[in-house]
Length: 112
Length: 116
Image (tube, rainbow over all chains, first blue to last red; front, side, top):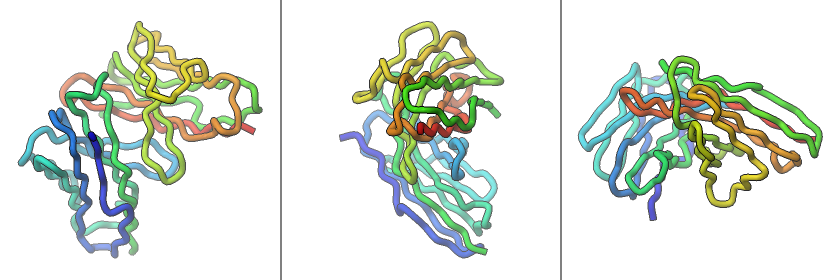
């Protein structure tokens, strides 16, 4: 079954405490893995797209990496403003209409 | 970056009335838009795919007569919740697919619907 699983479900960090979020997928024919950030009561904000294993993207304190089975979102020296829910989603060949399949999200709370 | 707007951001209505939500891509043309529903502390649930100039494709279990979708132009899609009931209360989010460069879905800010 085609699935996207994110772990952990929730993560509490102290400011400056680096950590990684995981997104594992069991789809075949990956056509893109997307990371979004969502603040409470708002729509998801696009962060990164990764297309092939070995690819890495960086933006400020965030770095996304991709392997053939999973993606990691590394948060380096997080600040309280990095608190949000991080969503990953995949687009794959069998999914009709270019739709995305989302994982359950990881809620990150960074304490000062 | 690509910007998607939604209107209204918040709506409260009485049971039995219909509510229309607009989704606009402001700086790019979107042949495909998507409508999602999100419950508290849950991930996004795709309701339907909206294609400009053609009928929407609904996900399994989503009532097409209940949630009417119209994609009349390359920058506008609308979702109408017909005869709304309290169980339709939710956070509705649209996204628009930008086919240039990264072929990415960009999301609107969402609409909070409360049906009394």
